[in-house]
Length: 64
Image (tube, one colour):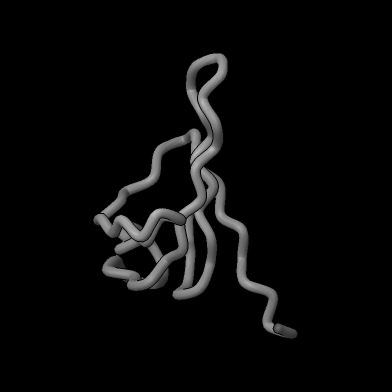
């Protein structure tokens, strides 16, 4: 997994009824875009994250 600042991480719910969570990458702490990442969730909570297989990266559109 590789991400850059501004990308979004989508953490899929693992149980029925659990919603996906979206976090913005605010800092990349690994080499060459690899985890861990400092992320900010939609509610403002920030944490360090090493995403698992239930997470996908949505890369920031450079045109925006």
